[in-house]
Length: 166
Image (cartoon, rainbow, N blue to C red; front, side, top):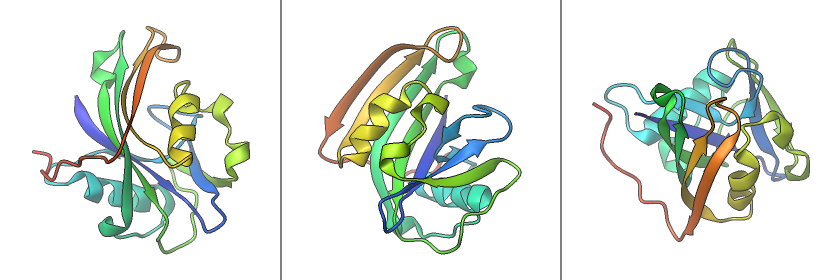
């Protein structure tokens, strides 16, 4: 199971930046920005790199707010299993631009397109948007879409691992 990150920029109006995936894992779904940690990277470095690669937004690792850790499990495809550190970022530079992988769009919280996202997102993302920090596991059915089980716990703080991926 390879560690990953997921980053959600938040603007001064409280809108959330999501990207519509144009290729690969999760194609056609709206999601945050992120991906697999590369050798020698920390979780935070990965989140910043992926945000830049997928949107052109530049930010600093110290400006990331750790808001969650989720363990995603795919019963029919264990090679898709991944644990993801989730971050919000409110301080960044640049205007989001479409890339080969993602088409970004700002959404007011009340119009987030949950029906076009991963099925579990409508359970855990509102918790984050309401100021909670979470740790949990989401298991998917063999179709890789339907949520088999979800176990989300609110926590006071996210304990980040300081190690680099090796």
